[in-house]
Length: 407
Image (cartoon, rainbow, N blue to C red; front, side, top):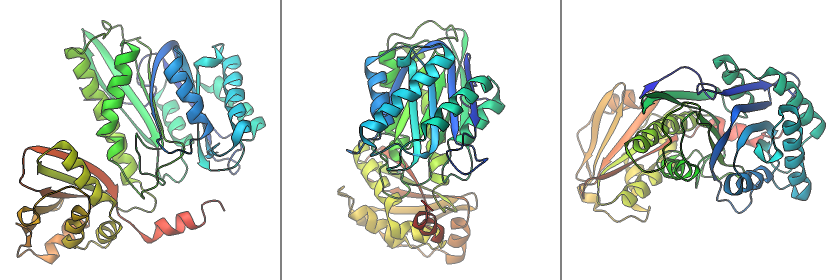
């Protein structure tokens, strides 16, 4: 497996485009399209929030009950959530417009929206954007980058990545783009992520691979504890790589799943590191756990602690907040056997040994905590299981951004 150029257009047969359709302020990009030259198997994971946006319901119907998806249309600025029957009808109208332009079935069009909840989509602008995007579609990395930029809301930069590997003597590529910065606390994935691949694989195994990978990538991210109404991960596979079709859990399946994990892990870290107002990616590793479930619970409790996140922002080695967060997580462990380390590009430092502070240098700790990526490693000495979660620091700007988000 190796990293390759591009995002959603890196795999064979995929094209993309991004444009300004006038949904946001004039001149700001706000619509994106992904198109596959061949029909795709589609897999997806979606928000567990009881309040589900109309696009989530539309895509669930297609992913679970249809086959042959070829198009994704995404708008930013308006979430199309809590919009009733009118909102659902706009999903269908979006699909109809794209299907007409691209000569595909209406049921082959997936839709996504992100932005302010409660507002109706301006369908004249949506349809105008679709017409514009259909004429702009290209298979270049530049086109993929424009699409990645067009789906941003409070994100500070586009998020895309791609990897390739050999399967059955053929080069297979997986590429993706995502957006996410605030309202991030997934119980399936997070915000919006679109992944494309030219691998030939059965629909059943495609879904299984995605569902498994999501657990250790997007489900291990939190920025602010809010699970969105629009969380969606879509994975499209058009089979154009020409590899022998993967129909069982063999060596090729495991290699594909490993590559899919890598793409989504990178994207999950990109989202966490670009949390609203964040200055640092905060990674928590729990090792020496008795079970994977225990490690997951402890690591997620650390990265969701507001006090810990604030300490990371202040470059303060306030390790008591981490031990406290582990203590209220619900997972059982012996606090008197915990070793805790801070690590970054500036070095690694043991902060506590057997639950008690070491004679560490505060100056050195501050230096380590001042990097753009900071890792807390907690060894609980109970077994061999481990888990990693990703979050970010909590800054003044997070409040500022969300206090006037609609204005």
